[in-house]
Image (cartoon, rainbow, N blue to C red; front, side, top):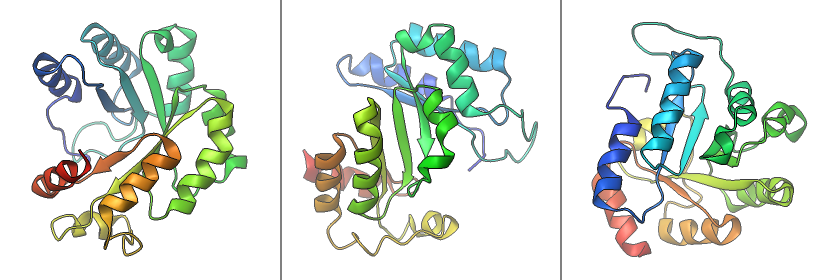
Length: 201
């Protein structure tokens, strides 16, 4: 986390070149970027035919600028005012147990929708969907795949996946049924991710 890697936009190009039908999204952090750099990234994403961008704060990088002071909701609001939201879907992140009275700035930014932090129960998804989907927002719950290789990530997040670890596929299917979308996260275990995806298709 916080370690520079290949640009998600670049990865998106490789995927798009091999499949022109799949919907592609990329995440972009604002913590170590200025507005000019972010604007260029959004323009690149549009030109390269990506479908969506998740704007989030991001973890502190090990080197370089630690905090640009930019706020994701304010960035999305400005991009919408500039018309970018008509050309590409802009998403914001959302806690798995949000206090809806404290996220009004995110809502006022009018993103296309919200990608949740890792969720551990169907009740969390239902609560968010019931509150925000009627307002026109798309909800994408994030599910962390249980595995030995992903255990370190779970511990770092103080996350408990015991509620669904015995039936991951069933949990994902139910999450999709509730929200219409799912983001599967498996940061350290790509083999496990492929196994689950094959069972879902």
